Image 1 (cartoon, rainbow, N blue to C red):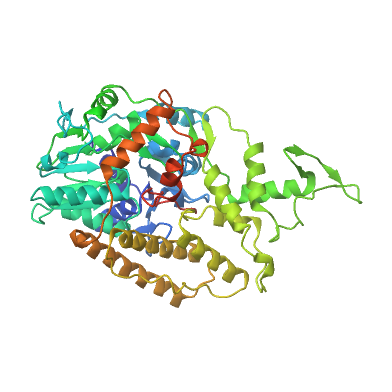
Image 2 (cartoon, rainbow, N blue to C red; image 1 turned 90 degrees about the vertical axis):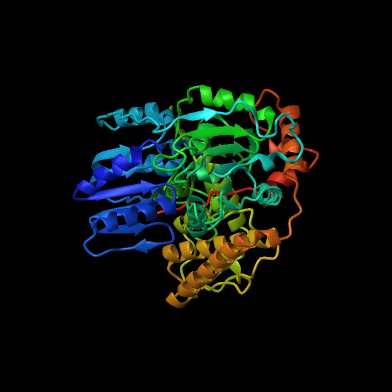
Length: 561
C-alpha cells in the first residue's frame, strides 16, 4: 500500500539482467507474468516449478531458490526483507542479501529491518541508501470492538459488512467464523489460510476482489499479511493470541501492523483502512501496537549449506568422538586422529541427528545472527534415523551426509503422518535404486466435512513434497511426475469445490471456547512472559492443542536450492 515494491520492479524492467526474490510462489509467479507481459524474457524458479525461457535475461524466484553461483546481475529485488528474522526461513534472506553478486540490491520491506540491513551492508563494504514510502491511504483503529462489550459470546459477526476481512489463526476457527457470518448475514465469505494450495489462495483473492462475484467478506489466517493484494475495507482480529506450533503467543507489534496494514488499498473502493477486534479485551493491545513504533529487528537468520555439513562431518571423522557433551580426539593405530562417530565415508550408518545436534552445540553466532530451524531439522533427522535403511537391498550408493541434510531441509510437515510416509517411501525407493512412485493412499476424494477438506490439503502437501524431492534426487520418472502433477490439479479442484460448497460440510468446533482456553492458559501461567512452554504443560490441553491439533498452519513456502 505504499508503492515500494512497484518502484523496485520498474527499475528491474530497465536493466539488462535482473532477479526478483520473493517469499511466496504466488508473488514470484506474479512478477514472472508482469515481466513477461512487458516483453522481458523471464525464467520462473520455485521449489516445485521451473520454467526456463530461451534467451531469458531475468528470473523471478522464491527467495530460497536464489542462485548460489557466481552469476552476476545488474539489479536484484529482495521482497519482504523483515522476514530475515523469521526463525524458520530467515536464513534465505540473509543468504540472498549477502551472497548475490550484483550492482544494486533493492530491498523492500518494513522499516523495522532498516538498521539491520544497513549494518549488513556496512559489513559487506557496500553503500547503503534509504528510500522511505508512506501509505497512500489512512489507517485508523475503530473506537469499539465488534462485540460491543460482550467478549465471550457468539453474535459479534452479525455486524460484519462488505469489504471486511476477519483474521483468525486456526483452520477450524476460520471455518466456524465463515459459517457464522453466512448464517447470520446475507454475505458470502472467501477463505484463505496457509495450507491451501497457492492456486486456491489466488482464486479466493480474485473472488473477494471482484465486486460482481457475490463474495463480500474474507475470513483468513495471517497468510494475508504478506503479498496478497486484497480490497479490504476493515481488518477484524478474531483474537490477538495464537499458537505458533511450539507455544502460545500474543501478537507482537510488527505482526499486528503487518496484518492491519492490508486494510485500505489505493485505486480500490476502499482507499482508507480500518482495524478493530472481535473482543473488547484485545482493543488495548491493538491500540498499543498501532500507536508504537515497530521494534527494530536485531538479528538475521543463518543456516548451514549442504557443503558446510559435509565439511563438518569430515572434520568429525578425523577429530571427534562423542561422549556426552565432551569432545575426545582419538588416535588410531596409524597415529592419526580418528573418530567413533560413524563408520566413515558419509555412509548410511551416519547418524545425521547426532551430527546436527553436534553442529548446533558447537556453532557460535555473533551479534546480529542466529541459527534457523534447529528444532525442526533435528526432529526430521531423528525420524529419518528410524527408517530401516540398513535392511534394504541397494543398487545406489547409501545416503550421504549431504543427502540426509537435504531431506531434513525438505518442506515436510513433521506432524503430518501422510507427509512423513511419502518421505519414507521416497527415501527407500531412492536407496534401492528404483523409480519413486506415489502411494496408492494419495488419492483425493470429494470433501464431505471440514476434516475431509483438511485431508485434501494434506494430500496436496504430500504431492508438493514428492515433486520437490523428485527435482533434487531425480529418481522418479516423467510418468510419475506427470501423475503427481495431474493429481495435484485434481486435488486443487476438489479443494475449490469444497470451499464453494462449505455450507454443506460437517463442522463441530467452537472458536469462542478455544479462544477462552488459550487466554486462560496464557494469563495463568505466564502473566508477565510472552509464551507458554509446551513441554512443561501438565494438564494435557496445550499439549493436545499444539502437538495434535490439525489447525496449526505450518510454513508452506519452505524451499531449499
